[in-house]
Amino acid sequence: MTTPTAPAPARATTLPASTRPLSLSRTTATATRVLRQLSHDPRTIALLMLIPCVMLFLLRYVFDGSPRTFDNIGASLLGIFPLITMFLVTSIATLRERTSGTLERLLAMPLGKGDLIAGYALAFGALAIVQSALATGLAVWLLGLDVTGSPWLLLLVALLDALLGTALGLFVSAFAASEFQAVQFMPAVIFPQLLLCGLFTPRDNMHPALEAVSDVLPMSYAVDGMNEVLRHTDMTATFIRDALIVAGCALLVLALGAATLKRRTA
Image (cartoon, rainbow, N blue to C red; front, top):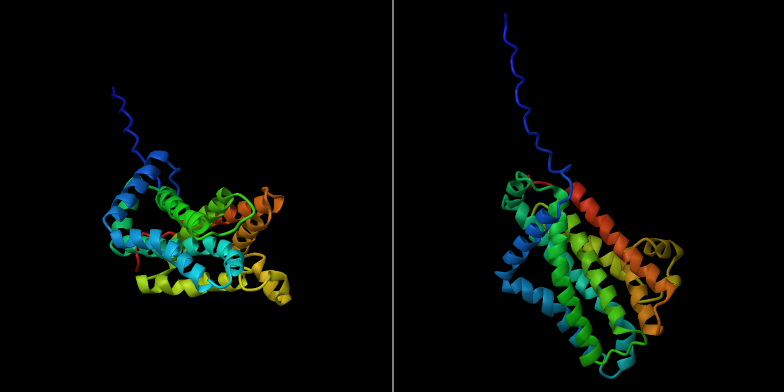
């Protein structure tokens, strides 16, 4: 009589990084690690916090003889400057993780791509809050930016713009092989939006083809949102639409960044 063989114990399966569910603990751990690393890099912190303030300060006194001009474009640039700085720092920092092999080691652990992208977004989002608060406070209370609406709405749009810059930086870092290439993406991703966002001329005065392109660029709605605060005392439906579009674009780009994230640079 033969003794039945006990079934072999089931092997634990490890989900690939791309299919692991998003975890709050892993996301916050990633954000904490990124913030700890940035705390040892004072030059990056200075770039993030001071450059938008310095640019606004220079802009105010470039138009010293025409304060109204500063009022007209200062609010728009209050959102554009954080977007640009967050784009640069985030794209380079993420690429550095990949080229050094850190990203490959992290994704070999129980850490999904979504956790990594969300952790970076959370870390840089925390910095974006401080950055946007400093720039908004400087523009409104020290440089005398005259806005009809609430400065808190300016801060909200500036924060959404900074988060959008973070999302774009995370996304484009997947397509760069070096830090120099990451910087080269700025003319391709940021400059066209800067020219078509309505900062230099109203978008309805552009060629119809360019106006159609500007209608699908998130920076256009960031500038429109700032202009709504500049001209209206209350929160308008147009402002809510613009803020939701900028926030939605940031979330969409973050999702694309998680989908296209590479373990390391070939």
